[in-house]
Image (cartoon, rainbow, N blue to C red; front, side):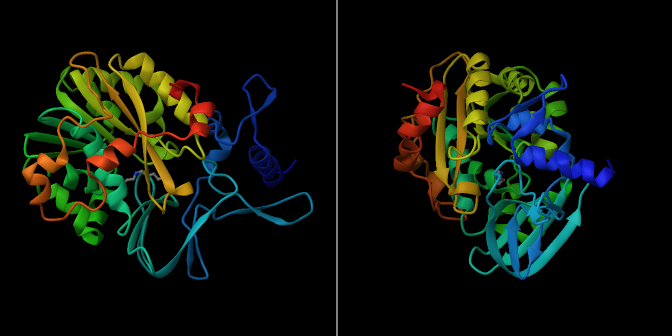
Length: 361
Ligand code: SPD
């Protein structure tokens, strides 16, 4: 069999939900079971940004395959097979490959500027507030007077902008692997990159796992993991060793807020992450979510975990944003988060509780 035909067959298998189990036999994987899929070599054929006839489509591969009947089949992102969200492009502002990923910025006709990494929308000017405000304030409003915070990823600066509303915070470390993301944000997304101007921010460009290895135990009150999806550079950020290092870097009663994908698409991944976090974080572990129209399926979730120590009641903010002076007298108004949205974020639909055993009451 020729090389192309072999690759087509392999790609067809993954589209059919079959991967090699390693023992030579094939097993069928549910479409959302990322862990099985990330080990598949087919994913080497990464998704790249495509703009066709003035539309950006997330995340159609630049290569197409031919099915048995000779029809062209597009191989889209394995994290959301069978769907591709599109935005109309006004102009492409930046497109380059960094050491880690393809970075694209374009001006859309209805969502403002858009940042895309390896073909996946990371943020748009219109709806970024729903993500950055929630991922930052859900943990920081759940503990009294947070002082030391670490952001993993978050190179666009939006999460830093939100943390800076908390005047109790004295020190913010951020560890972002890709300097190009920071530079591009400073150039094209000043409303987010403003977060880097806070003198409490200490920037570390490098691998978060390596960074965490050198962090003194119990250094942080809160850690926020604002990663991209676990394909490419962020793959290790859903694995147990990563969560174990996070737990060690948190003080007793410290909190983690970790991006945790979509309840419509990734229940297997959510279940896996919950299970790892329940083993690792001896305080409590909850799932919350927010609505982000330009993310696949229009929603994204967060895992909220606390270490053993002073108990944390994530569902009822003990440090309400409405009482924080700095939160309102800030360069930018809050657009999405308030205490009501905080409490609502933990309400879960029955289908999710049925599908994810660990979310049952
Ligand atoms: N599917 C997209 C998930 C992106 C999560 N990170 C966004 C970075 C914004 N600061």
